[in-house]
Image (cartoon, rainbow, N blue to C red):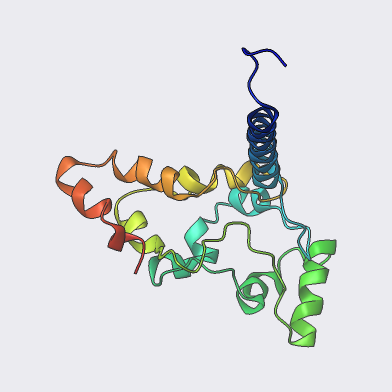
Length: 182
């Protein structure tokens, strides 16, 4: 070994450090790809429901998701809400017959939520609707989707981007941690 070469132990440490950096980079990249794939995916639902039929009929989001204006969550319509119309409308349609089967069995439809917030996040649709934000801003043009899927990654950065883009007199309140974490 010449006097200019580092000892063997530091070279091993350098290799290990490089290996750790490479592994972390690959893991981070994989996490990003998996997250983006989940974002683009529509969860499989128990009934092949298409919003466009209802939108084309002139039904507004809040008719079926009325909880959004009254409570913290928009909620998924109950079988009773759906059957309120479908007792007489499109009764021969295959998906309506699937809906009616849940109704007849007295069971709720086990819909899979499309957008979820972690338990440590407080979110309410009410102030957003009151602030004039329409459903499409966060949920995309659901009326043109064959299957409802997430269109944005609803994470803290995304929310803060919107909150900091509000009127200056509201930004301090909207960016305070307590606004979303209660």
